[in-house]
Length: 400
Image (cartoon, rainbow, N blue to C red; front, side, top):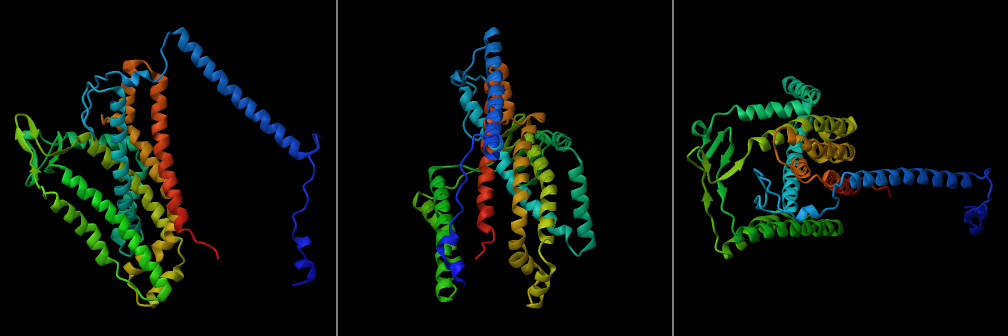
């Protein structure tokens, strides 16, 4: 290394030019244009706000969120938490948020599984499997989602009534009232066992991380599965046993014109879930296929030369590399599924959009109702984006 390169004077940053109050200075022009743009945007926002407030005052329309504490009187067919029409609008909207989360989160999981399988099937060497997967993708992606939701809802309504319900398995009934199946009578012991299972997941992850660190230090592999079985199965069973091991099943039975007992999956929820999953899976399949094809063919050949089977190559070598390409567009598909769930209003499923629309029709608080819907979807979308961005950064290649 030369003396000039080693001299610390040559590693100093060049001095900053003083700011000249002249239009010829690009920094001055940049500051002026930013002030102008901010001023224009602020003026537009102020005009919209003042115009809205004036129109509301002229029409004597009350504003604010005080209506949330009033009695809703709104019937809701299904809810995750207990709800009664005498409850407040706030609780009714909370039920709507939970219904949206229920279909969105379950839909994301199922769409990911189905889309991944179809994407892999498109690359199958079996001609029939590959063509069937391609046919599924092309048909599903070319049909509007609303049309598919109406199709599945029509199918659900085409099943026979409760008295002629299909009974494929003991205790399971399928009718135009939905799918009825046995349910576990939930008690405090089950809640404790569930918490123990969640704690077991965290402890298993910590143990696996520590075992991996020790292996990197001394080169000796450690078995993780015995600890995983003990923490994920043994610990919840132990907690459940200590608390009395309750196990009571609520079986559905036909009484009058409908079934009583058990758990119900309504036709509206089933149609919405099936429609969202099958539609989004078509897009996820293409993302997965593109991610797998982005991995160099030499990776396949090198792994096969080592004697690995096709499934092992895909699971251990190709997919970990393909995830770096798959995750960013996969995030967009998750967001689309969540936002597309707002089409539930077309088939009568009471999500946040449906309940908020009914609320603003009853109260006249249109601005507040729309604002609540926007904030709910913004919060859910940002949460999904933050989690996926964190995961994407975690699996990204780190240059040394």
